[in-house]
Each structure stands twice: as structure tokens, then as C-alpha cells.
Length: 509
Image (tube, rainbow, N blue to C red):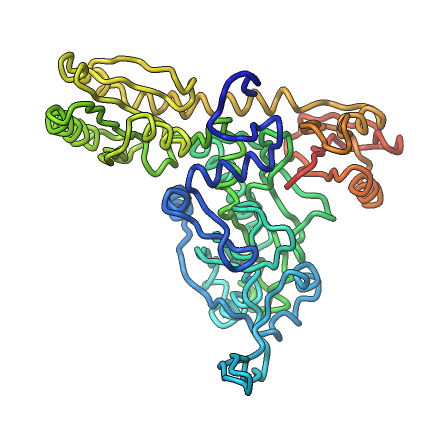
């Protein structure tokens, strides 16, 4: 996927030169987001928010199809609610933002200062298990009230020390599902159902291949009995946790008092789950599909799938060209892709064609269509696909283009997934020795590490101490324990002790 060094690119540095800085430059050049004046927070610009809106709309449809409905719960959580779930609180304590006062007043120096201390401090939600549990405790009385299948789209705050746009910010947007069930088996099935939805969404909508499975005990969500995850490999060969689904057992039900009368007339605690994905997915798409000229967007989530660029060097041709563009737009909007109307936009700005073309390249729009005087004569269009070389262009009769648009968009979607899967598979290694493992994750240049490593499939004896040692030595963690039965038993490469199966190790964001 690398660009030859002698070719000029729209983004500097290139991915192979400085991947973290390349990512930041792509986010800015594509006008996805920018840092705000509040440390660690970001302004999501319309193009970036359009991507998130499409993700939200499509995922929400999948949730609704599986019986879930949306609600909204408060941003502020009384501190006392956190006191009921010690393990959960410990996991989030360092990231919490706390409101302690109301009202501002002017002091003797003319400066504003907080005035009234709150009787009880309020935590700005890092996640909503505790406050949603309080509502569920009021709503659930009998097994007839179950299951509760609720999702909310919201913002959360986790105080980040090392923010990075979309990947880690103090405030971010997400969805969080919270469900209550009558039995353990139903709750476990719910957690697995959501994992399957996330995996399907990543694959079919984001063109992202993932490994799915379970987190190790040390990597679980605080307070969970089991955490299920999908893990993606981006182009610097690191892992990104792209979505998690948690089976919480009865832990949060006990803490929140979610009880019901069961079918035998006895009181029982509910079985709960929680699950979520966030705006981190926008960053994941950039790091998965982007190139040295900017973002590359899968058509299913692109805010605009086709941009039409009128090319009118002479003013007398402009009206005729724009009229043809508008007629093409009307026809395209009658066409459907992925069972939705196609999103198309005519760039009428009074700018040079080259400037406009490169802006849309950097934004990652799937199809760019040029219409100039010669195209009017031939009733044709010049079509460029963002998944191909930026200078590649195909002349096509207009009628043929209109007829083939859904097929072309599907081809782009499929090619992005195939390319990403090939990259992941090439950089996923079966490793059978400790030395091989350490060599795989150790850069040749430790002062300025080159892109190295990937996903390692290696046997592990289940020891938390070994996990900590590897994390300390290499900054490598177990990303996922696959749920399928394809891996054979063996010996832990670190201790020689028995291992039930291989697990996936990687450096991560």
C-alpha cells in the first residue's frame, strides 16, 4: 500500500515516514475534525460528522431490527451511584470529570469563580451503567417486564492524558446499549448477538475485516464477567478495538437493585449486558483505508458518494455544462445503492478544476465525475474512482454511467474490504517461540521505530503475570481470544505450559 518515494503526494509525511503524523494530517486535510480550545476535545466538521451520521443511521437500523429501542439518560451521575460498584469505579476513577459547584460569581479581583458547592458531586458520565441501572431497578418488577432492550446515542467524557482526534478524546460520541434479561443464557446470547452485529457492520458497511472473540480477564470492561470484542488491524499494523459487548452477569443488577419476581414467585436479580461503539470508528476507517493523498471512504458510509465537477474554461459554456450536471444529478438521485438513494453533489464553486479535484481526493469521496465541453459533445462523463490511482480516469457514455453506478460503488466497497483483508492476513503470523515473538514486535530502529509487527497468533498459558510481562517488555497485549474452535491445543511459548488455543497479540491504540 506504500507510495513510491519519488512520487509527490497530497499528504506529508507519507504513511511509511511517520504514520501518526500522517493520520493527523489526513484528518485535517479531509476536513473531518480539528482540535478545540478545550484541551483533549475536538470539533467534528460537517464532512466528519456526515460519516458518523451514516454510521449511526445504519447501525441504529440494525439495532431496531433486532428488537432494541432508543432512550436517553442524564449526562450527570451522582457520585453515590458509583460507590455501589467498586470494581467498575476503580476502572474509570482516573478518567472521571467531576462537577462540584453551581453558579459563577465575580470575586474581588473581577474574576469569575465557582460559588455554591454541591451537596453531592456529580460525575459527567464516562459510561452509564450505574445511572441506567437505577432506572431499570424502578422499571423491573416481574419476569414479565423482561427483557429490557435499550440503546442510547450520547456523548461521554473520559479525561484523556494523550488525546488524538477521533481515537482518544476527552469527550466523544457513541452509542451504549444496556439490557436486562431473565436468565444467564439469554444475556449471554444478547452479548453475542451484538458482537455479530458489530462484526457484520464493520465488514459490510465499513469494509473493515476484524478478528472477533473474547478479551482476557485483565482486558475486560471493569465489572464485567465477559467482554467480547472486534479488533481491526490498521496500516501501521497496530490493533484498534472497534467495538465491545459485555456480559455483566448479575454484578450491576446487585449493585443497582434490579430485581424481579421469577416464574416460581421468588425474587431474583436480573442478568445484564452493555455494549458500544464510538466515533473512534471514523478514525479507524481513515487509518484502515486512507492513502498518501488523503482519506478513502467506503461508499456505504460516505456523506457524498459521487461529486460532479463542472469543467468550464469558457464562461459561455458554463450554463450548458451546469444544466447537464443538474440533469445527471436528478437521474442519479433516482438510483439506489445498498437500498438507499445515492448521495450526489455538484461542486459549483468558482475555483480551478484541479483545486476542486484535489479537495475531493483528500476527502475520500468514492467517485469523481468531470463534465466539460467535450463531454457535452459526446454525451459522456470522465469517471475517477478513489480506490484507484488518483490520475486514473475512464471516459464513459452518460447512459452507461447512470446504469452502472450501483455496480461501480459496490465494486469500490468490495475492493476496499479485499485490500484491507489481504493486508491484515499478510501481517498476521503464527509464532511458535518466545524469541520469534520478541523479534516480531521489536523495531530495528528503537530511536524512531519503523512500521513493524502485526498480529501474532501464539499459545499462552492463561497467566495474568505473563500478560503483564509482555505488556511491560513490548507494549503488546492480548487483543482477542477467538471464539471459534479452529485453533489446536499446544504449549505456551513463554513458559512451555499447556495452552488451550492460540490467542491474538498486538500493539494497539
